[in-house]
Length: 220
Image (cartoon, rainbow, N blue to C red; front, side, top):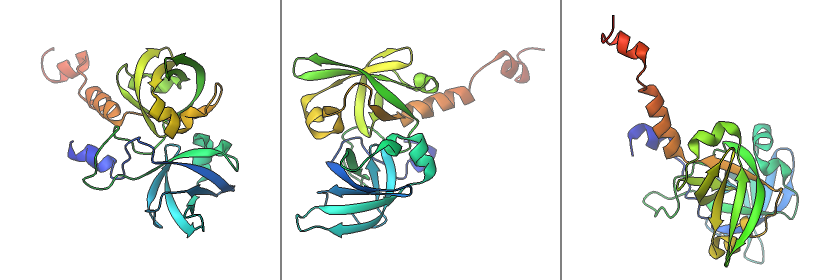
């Protein structure tokens, strides 16, 4: 990984969900989630439905679960599906990757690119094929067999269409993430693959046009 790309993802997730938390409190500025994850400290970064949030408080419960509180900005509520959360809703949780940790999914930053919807859910043996919508401006970053994070879940794109794509969801993912309880019409936070964004950015920077050739002296 190049130095500039590494710096861009100093806090990183893998898209492998560690726990299904339950929303216990929510306000215009904070959210509190109950979780069984026990290695969380104040100041830690945690992905909540794919959104990177910072822990501001943690209290232990007699059940050995924890109540973890995060600050949320108005912008985050507006630009992600966290604004639709209510008490009792289940959310995907993942702690930030530790230095030297294994990367089970793909590089995920916790910075949401847009919000899509579940358009269709089809059964395929013991798995499901889920079709998601995506904002038009994200289409160029979505490629078949490429990676994408949906509500923080690392998925492989099976098929790409105009402003939509499909992914196969295996039984393990259905059991251990919110995709097992999502239904058609539900919203999902989308983070496209940072490597795809980086490659396209570099390609656009180095794009050869008639003007660049002229400036280089190939044409008068």
